[in-house]
Image (cartoon, rainbow, N blue to C red; front, side, top):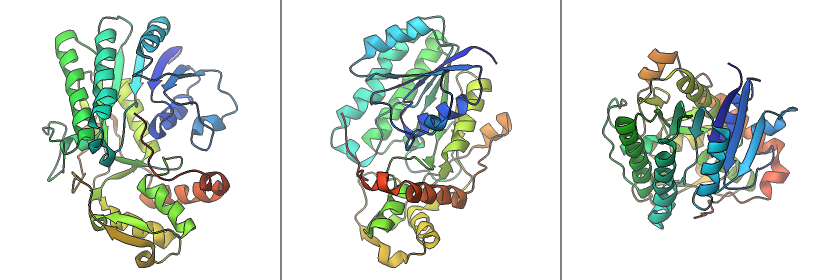
Length: 332
């Protein structure tokens, strides 16, 4: 593959930056990354550890405020492939200002897909969605499971997926939808449960377990997800939806206990039980047989290995990490 122009929306995000780094392994790729914030340091952007970045261009644009400029940039560069990681994330805070989540996650993309559907340069558009659109998962959840979102965040993601699907049916828009589960790894946002646990243990702060930490998550390492997204981008069937998830889940409580054990800390002394979040889904375990059959994809990085990576990242960069907040800061 040579001279492939690829646009990555949300390139400054945890998942976006890892995918950019994977794309840059191929010298034939010309990659443009877009996010609303200033490009961060190598503490959070793996690709910035590279000696050579001539094939990568970063643009700071807000999809809500700078959409005309973004559309102009897209028409100028005419990328054949676009991958979208941009989204207003976080579940709990979406109850406070649900209109912010719908503005970013749905309205902005309505403008984007309406524009791109009238252009001839986009061959593939990968939408990174969320398994939370299904609501609490019971039994074997495959890609044809109806959505049943439990929060404004999940509802906004589901609405966007339905919108893209409608443009595919009516106009042939080349959408591919990916629903990963709970990604983790070094460079993740500090308020996420795995890095936050590592940070709190160093600070001797109590780790809050909402609802006792009984919610079951399917943690998957970010590089495994990036590999899956690349396979779907290259060879996925237009109009299809793909899951990227391990075959089993683990409770938040068990994950925190694992981190405590690996840090030689007593679990009971490190945590406190607090009330559950509104709309907290009990279980996220989805089936990824479709991706395995189509691409041979499966998670390769063990959770223990990924947690060791996070612990090393926190310890090696402690002076810089300790100066930053590990609380979620909402930006409309």
